[in-house]
Length: 315
Image (cartoon, rainbow, N blue to C red; front, side, top):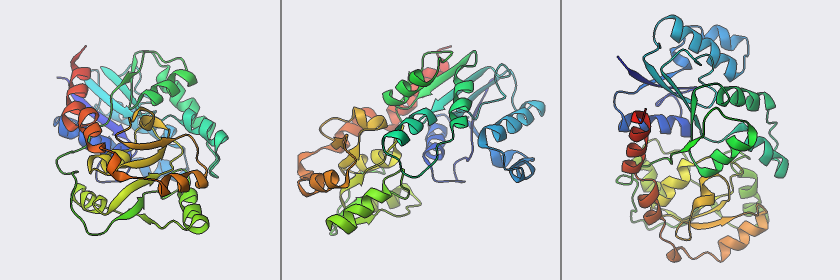
């Protein structure tokens, strides 16, 4: 009997990153999906004590999953990037999702360094995954697909499936407070640029902060005039989609899905200089945009569910 699984470092409820959100939305779309993560592997603590990189942890865990019969020739397995290593040829279908390639991150680090050393061994691990025979690839944006094709010779043509967000919960709300908002918690996400806007350009920009539920996010986005997102590298950023769904336009860098935004979404710029963002913010007119319309057309939950269901049944 065919079974369906998702594998990543963290599963929904264990972390708040985009991959965990993707897995949660995928399980909503396909309830029979089983989410697996490193926490399910009994040898996790011993392996982590050796300070092994994630791609080696993936191989150890996946070998255990096959050895114990948790995965077999009837298993359809969807993984985050290289988290399918060790499963090649051992499951019915092996599908790797590119949420943003390490190759793309490496290239962007040469264009605008943010102080992070991008380990090329992660590029090699993704290449090993994507060039393996019979591995299917889903990219979350056209830009992520381009990064795959530029970095390796994949065994199959990547299919592009956009993320989806809950447009019912993530909807516009009234608020008396209106602020410039950002969600940058690292320099890769543009925290250094936000700091420059505050210190050098006298622009008060308020951190979005933690929002445990989608309802909390909708309430928080009600306070925003615009989401300022000088993120240097993305595949398909959930926080951008969530802002747009709540009716909040964005000012962001042209990376990942932002390259496909149209004039309804806000401003997409190719200049990461703080003075450029300061200029764009001071001249911004939120009433000129209709971001929610774009999300409902392209990234609604029905689109996401239908696209993934169709992809999983076409063979």
